[in-house]
Length: 328
Image (cartoon, rainbow, N blue to C red; front, side, top):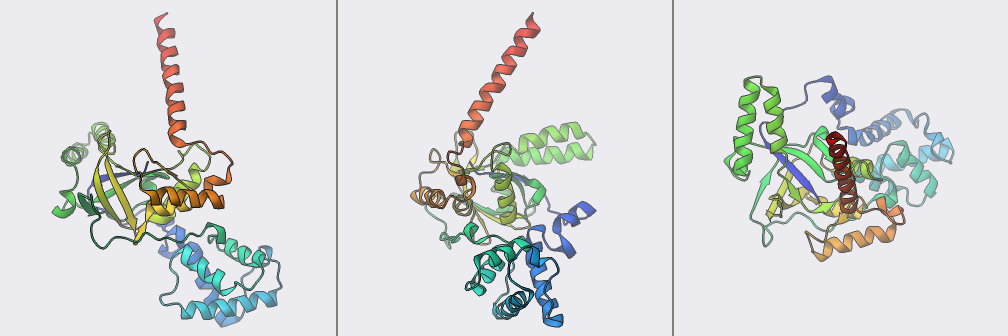
């Protein structure tokens, strides 16, 4: 299940040291630090003809060979229009430029900068639609996503503008009312009430795919991958309707990429056929299974809906035992 929780309000730029740290060196988003580091080292090589210290610990070839790589990469970087901005774009440039070199060296260079390895890169096919697909009731845009608001591999909290009627009109009435009540409670410094209303607000959301829970194997990796995709980005949300729990069923796009496709192809989510029977989602999961990427590296990964059902039953048993002990 892909759950996109939303709140009404104004998005603010980071102001604390913690916020600035989450953006990385000199304001670069943390997920793009490797790209910035590679660009810095190429610029440094152009001036000094020196490769980075410590690179030899990650690769097998000599310093002379390393200098040859950086000459090629510098030329390729200059020729790229526009130059790489994301880890995926930078990794593809490195892989294509050094495709005739040893695999261990290419992967070592990528690892040195924290860039994706070749087997983790996927080719996306479902670009953002130019017109609304059949069945879509409405769409809205979000403010940039804060990395701290990403709960797990299929859940996050995002903000929409209350000053833009095109966006706020798409938010369910009960959420709008709760958002106003929360603001009033905070103004009155009744933070207990404000927090309770906040919990009510975030129960609204969107469904699509199902990623491992944080406590499950690959749960942490799924959350990290989703963070790389959406951190600091605005989302385009296409809403189809509501599920049995009153939550909206939607497709999520980020920078023209279909987020569900990316998470499925990278092996960090299941196709949740109960709620979405589109054949392409099943095909993308099958591709990830075949290449054994992400959670499919495990021979028999546990399905998150089964994990939740099992742990819910355990919780119910604990409650019943507690009730019995208190009744004695």
